Amino acid sequence: MAQTQASLGIDWGTHSSKWTWTVFESDSHGVTLGQFKILHSDVRLDSSNHKIFLSSDPPPSDSVYESSIKGKVIRDPDGSFWGGQRRQTKLTLGDLVSFSLWFLLGEAYENLCANTGKEPDSVEFRFSLPNWVGIKDAAVARASYEQAARVACHIFVNDRQAWSRDPNPVREDWHANVQKALEELKISDEFEINAETQDFASLLQRIFTVAQGVTFRFVAESSAAGLTGLRNVEADLEGHRYLRKILVVDVGAGSTDIGYVLRTIPPGHEGANEALIQLPPANTCHFAGEELTRSIVEIYRSRGERITDLEAELRKTVREDKDWLNHPAVDEWRRSIAEHVLSYVADIPDRRWLPENPALQVLVTGGSSAVTGLGEKIVEAAKTGLERRGISDEVIQGTSLMTLSLEGPPAADANRLAVALGAASNDLPNLRYYPELDPPMPFATVRPLPPW
Image 1 (tube, one colour):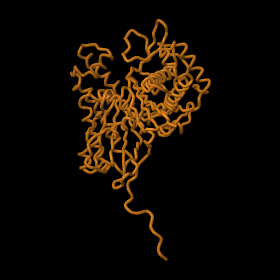
Image 2: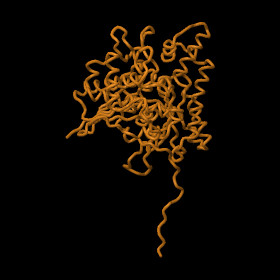
Image 3: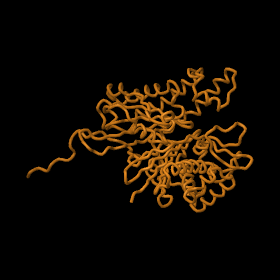
Image 4: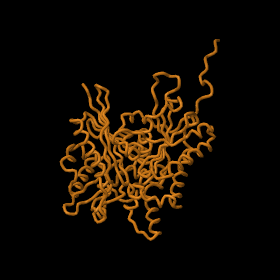
C-alpha cells in the first residue's frame, strides 16, 4: 500500500521563524516540495481579548509582545522555565516557547494538508537547533528546548486541527493546555537533566516518538543550511563531482552558527552510495544580527539621529541607506565573525577530505548574510585557517564564496530559508554525524598470511 511521508522543517529563530515541508510518495518515489512562510518570532498578545499569536508583520511599538524568546532560553538557564510569568504577557517562558513551536508546526501542517488534499500517513517535525556548544549550561538550554518541543508536539497530536480552527488561542486556555501536557508528560522545572542525552551530538542523533506515525528531531542549523548547499545545482566543480565540501556560516539574529558538511562518493566507484556527513560545529558565536542592529542604532544616535531597533533592522535589510557600512563598529563586527571562522577552519576535524581538491566552498546564510563585505571577510578568514593547517596553495586559492541558486518563490529569500529547506529535505535522514574524519592509510593494514 502506498504511503505518504511528510517532513516539516521548522526554523525557530530569535527575530524571525520559517517553515516549509516536503512530501514523499512511496509508490511513485516522488517528492513534492511545499510552500514556505517567514514569520516574526515575537509572541504577541491582543490586549482586548487576550489572544496570543505570531504574525508576518513586526509588532507595533505600543502593542504587548515578548521578543527574543529564543535568546532568553540560553541567557537565563538557571531561571524558571515552566513557572513564573513574564511581566508583559503573563505567560511563562515555557508557555511562550511551546506556543511558538506549536504555531509554526500547526500552520505548516495545515498548509501541507490544504495543498496535498489529504493528511500524510506519517509526519516528522524537524526543529532547528542552534550551535549551543561550549557554553556554560548549554545542556540546560537544550533540555528546555526539548521539553517545549515535546509539549508542542503533544498538544498537536491531541488535536491536529486545533490550529486550523483557532490559531490564536486565549492566553489562559493555552497556559491550561500546557499545564495539562506537562502533567501527562511528567515534565517540570525539577526534571533531572541527563548531561549525556543533552549533549549536542547526542541530541542530533535522537528521534522522538510522539504518537503513531508522528516523530520529531533536532537539526543543527549550520548542517541544515549546508545540506541545502550540497543539493544546490552548480557546475562540475572541476571534475570532482564525487566530493563537495561546504563551510557554512549562518548569521542569525542571536548567534552565528558555523559548521562543515560534505558529500563524497569514492572516486572510481560507479554507482557507489554517496555519504552525506556533518562534523562538529563551532562553539556559539555571539556576534550576529542583534549585535549589528545595536551598532547601527548607536551609529545614528552618535550623529544626532535617534532611531529604534526596528528602524535599524530595516536599514540593515533593505540597504537603501549605506552610510553605516564603513563605520569602524561595523568593520569590527565583520572581523569578529571572521575570527571565529578562522579558528574553526584551523581545527575542523577533517584530515581526510579537507586537504583534497576540489576547494572549500563557503556558504553564508541568515538574515544578516547580505551585509556588504561580510562574505569576502569570511572567505579571507577561511583561507587563513587553511593556510595554518598546511593545506596546499591550490586548495586555498580555490576556496570561494558560493551562492544558493534556487528556483521559484524561495529564490528571493534563499539565504533566510536555507535552514528550513535543509531541515525539511528528504535527504536529511542520510546526513550522518562524525566526530572526526581521519586521514587515509598510507599502506594496507591487513597483510596476507605467509604461505608456510
